[in-house]
Length: 139
Image 1 (cartoon, one colour):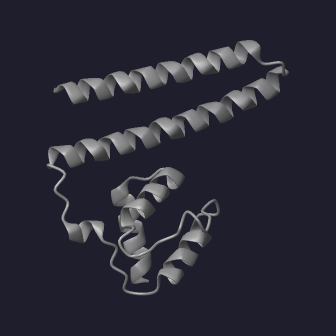
Image 2 (tube, helix red, strand yellow):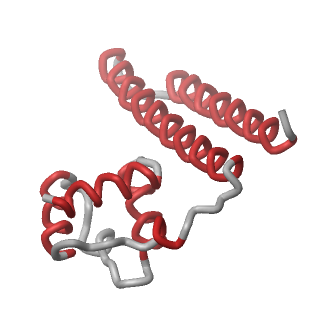
């Protein structure tokens, strides 16, 4: 295990510890009744779980890229459109209500920015985003 893996593990543990401390503090300081407090705790736990899951996916993708030397070819980075971007964009908007027009802005050569925005917004890895767009593009 190299230093970067150890550092990633420490970051993950610190994140989980911070989430736990925040939940405990929220319970202790909550001015709501028991039912409302439990519902809020469940919402916060679900959100924290989603955040941890998204971070783990991103870290895993980054580690995978580093182990393979990060030598993705230019063809992997470039978005190849077989149809209209407007068609793909409208399908993404139908499938993901929280995507905005700004999230889906795309111009040739701006693939990485698009992928980054979609990764943050959807909580998916770059590979998942590329695959999803490619699948929609084929339809």
